[in-house]
Length: 253
Image 1 (tube, rainbow, N blue to C red):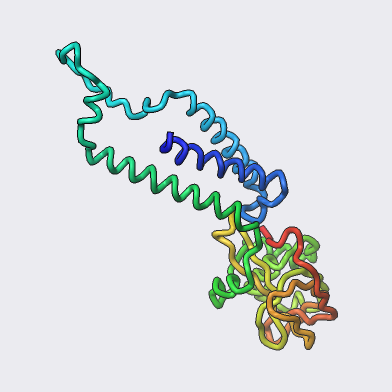
Image 2: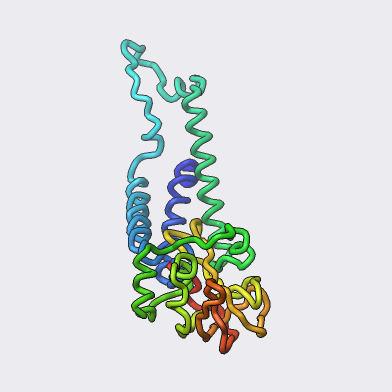
């Protein structure tokens, strides 16, 4: 029963937590919302599997299945097992069960004790590579040239800023974007974490903002301003920098 609860119980707990996060709208703090349906489906399937597993009698999985042949009639099967030494395979299996169960319980416990929270500005800084990650393909720049940028976020504009061969085309474009403050030159870097699948692959995207109004590091702000071409480099000249609370959806996907 201990081994069953260690493995099956831990899986059931994590599955239930996944579904609870989805119901409360907080699963998006861990994974891309487009993948939520898959995570919830697998969690529900895991719960069904856990329930079915308890139908099996205890010890059924460890039935060695050997043939006793011509063993005496008074052969005590239970006593035989108690006297038989554990094989290396059984020892390794037990160790793997304990390790896997402990890891699952630790993860579930962390999810219970630590409330979901967005990744910090410090982590974003630690993941900065010095060059702008390209979150979009060449179509992003082509779309930006047409002026159809109403749906653009910081990740989209970061790709445009990094790959535009004719930056003067975007000079004068008015934008309004939300992100958090990171250190930058001649102002600050308006930053947002971009997630492809889950928070593990989150990468920061930043836009240089020229302004004298520099909020504290990590503060969420909405910047309204104009894109300017400064010696072949694009930057945002801020008309206003409004400090706001962290948005409900802090990531871009």
